Image 1 (cartoon, rainbow, N blue to C red):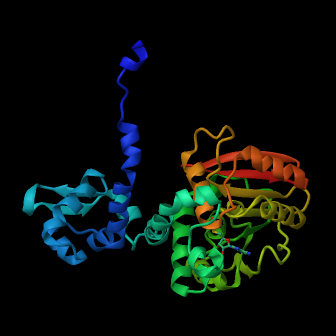
Image 2 (spheres, rainbow, N blue to C red):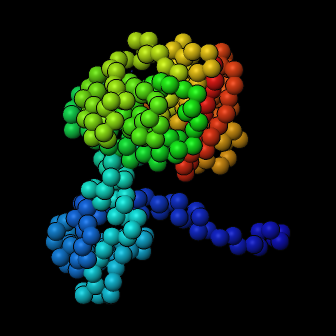
Image 3 (cartoon, protein in one colour):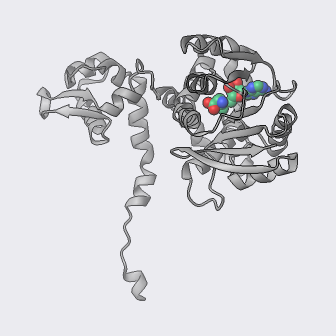
Length: 345
Ligand SMILES: C[S@@+](CC[C@H](N)C(=O)[O-])C[C@H]1O[C@@H](n2cnc3c(N)ncnc32)[C@H](O)[C@@H]1O
């Protein structure tokens, strides 16, 4: 026996990843039951909280205490007299009444992606998507957008995922040379509103499919920036993009195959003046594809959702934009796994 095989390695990382779905499902179920929202700023005894969210009395302790051990709930005391409360992070991100609620994406993970990821093996073997399209035959956006409740849920999911990235972009990027911004696939208009709040000299337009426009108008008005942020409705594969000095695409290019990615990059090039810039905000994969696990998993999620769509690195973006005629490139880290890939015309 060699010395090497006598070394006992730590199996914890393997087991942690393998059992990860247990923790994930506990958190997603707590969001589904409205635990954090119902708690709000209260301190509530386990039995009472369990009754409020509808949990079988025998399972109250395990469920809430697992959330305590995961640090998503706080608990004062032990046993039946203990009271549960929201942690500061839970209050900010998991209580639906908070403006920074991220639960929209957790709700979508729970109702859609948890079950679709069960079919990852089939997706990997066939290269085919594993979402609603398997049953309805309709592509994802057509399927989700045919039902106002699911459209609303998808928009909430995008807000949950993108808010901190758009805030970081609005803070860090130098907007001084630009007068107009077009956000392609702008969903609720969140990128435009975050930029407009901080940079009053900019006129911004959020462009998306027609069913999304009323939602965007409502959110832009609620943010109090209707005077400087407008909406435009269209299909970015059928219509030319409205002209602007700065074009942003938040999680747009990753939704499509290479041919469609190139269509969108060329459409942006045509809509920009010389000196204009295209910015893609994504969980950009590191060039060596070793570090950004979230970006790599997001790319597998694009397999689940679309089949031939995939996430990409800054080097990929640079190559594609170079082919379209862009001259200069940079990558700016935003928040967590997200970065902005920037190409200048
Ligand atoms: C993954 S979401 C990203 C939303 C937002 N940019 C963000 O990063 O949070 C993709 C967006 O592209 C929009 N979209 C999809 N197909 C489109 C098309 N053909 N024309 C215009 N917008 C489209 C969707 O409605 C959706 O809002």
